[in-house]
Length: 399
Image (cartoon, rainbow, N blue to C red):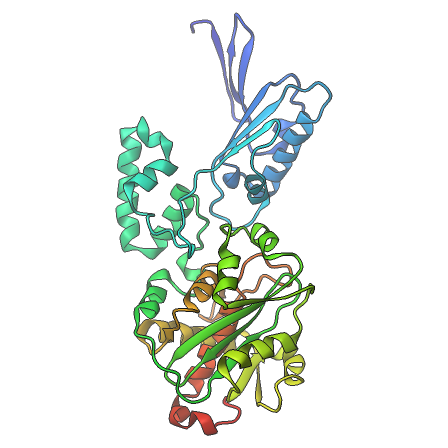
């Protein structure tokens, strides 16, 4: 057929130009088929985020190894998405960017300062992230149809953000709060501080931040975070893959402090932080595993040990969703960016009985879900104290 020979089988596909012996070969994501790349000048690697997790990593390693062979002409071009997973070897690949023989390109929807993809449903932004629309009318129609459906269904929106705009976005069933519910809470008039607040504490270790969320009997919430001083905020931003300047803006606003010269934040620093802003609280609440550390620094204020089993966590999470949806949860404007950034990465895990549990990333987490963890505790405490809301000041340990 015009001087070409075609290869198309169950395991391989390719084209050979007979007169020049130029070959184009399709390689699957199974690394076994990628071994032995000798004399190959170019590897065009499409959609690394969609490669099978284990086999894809081995394929990537095989290509990197081939480029390191003496005299190898191989150059690699990675083009594609991060979605739908929020972690994986391809995130490190894209974060590292282009260098030497490697070119990396991933077109993502632009975010505003709060990390919100405001223009996700605007055609210019969709077109920028999907260059194929310039030559394919059929693809344009497909994207517009998917966009219109995503506007009406949060589950479809998550898929659209992941697969069309390269923003890893969890299914609505595993997000702590939907964007719409949180925006409803942000739009609610901020109530006044009344009485002494209850303060929920999440103590961080390693990469995690320590956080405090205060909630008043009016439903008003405020939040702060304490980060380790080592590494610097700039390096923490790069490690956590957030837009440059995000943590610095939180620091400048006073909602984030740093434990200078420390890799682990002292509990005393966090208690000093929250009492400087909110005064002596009516009570503290914290996860039972580290509550003894907290009790040594609170100066006699009652401390509630909260279990985080399925049933207890499910109650607290449902309470937060209810308060955000129907009120009276309101958010201090100064705290809104910090809480919003944390909720954007907060995830829950449902079980077969209809309960949900907050999923922390552990001591080495690279997602700022620490504020969300404290917010859940605060919402649960607020809901359990409903009958005694008017007697908030006189209540010692609620729940």
